Image (cartoon, rainbow, N blue to C red):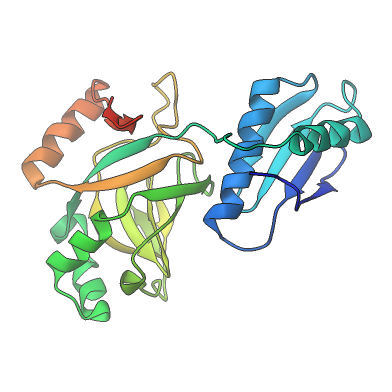
Length: 246
């Protein structure tokens, strides 16, 4: 992979945006995460943070340590070296979800809108491994790509004032998991007892941009068991890395 098609734009006096395009595309997003991973490995003095988005990488830096021009040179040097065989490390998190009923009140609407049974909606929603393009909106809120287009459903005309933490929803052509109680306008099809954000954990946000999520259907009994463990701080969300469950 060569990162040759990009532009570097200043963002204020202490950040730059490296932009690879203007559309949501897994190939473009892969370039963002590859550069993010390489910059993190290089540990260039003066770089304070790197924040991946759908199609750009925001690089925050200390201008007293590294100047704008020097930072641009470092970015161009890294990308010019050739990146064949380089990819950001990725994990696939297995997120348990109890679908329908009180946990997903909009499942009947989504099924009717799609012309499918509720069971078929669940099967199609659980089928893909969803790429986490970026995190935003709330700590641990993941913007996912890869949803079956037949499940595309319009948002609510009037957003709810409170959506329970763990709710799994569909908004337009995207699906996502609410990490905490918040307002929102997505159609709720289920709820997960897994906590994407937990300030008690060493890694407070469960996953990072570039990882993947696989939704796994569970029943209410399993939901309550996992919820109790998560509340006690003893639940460890399983994930796949290198083909093995961790």
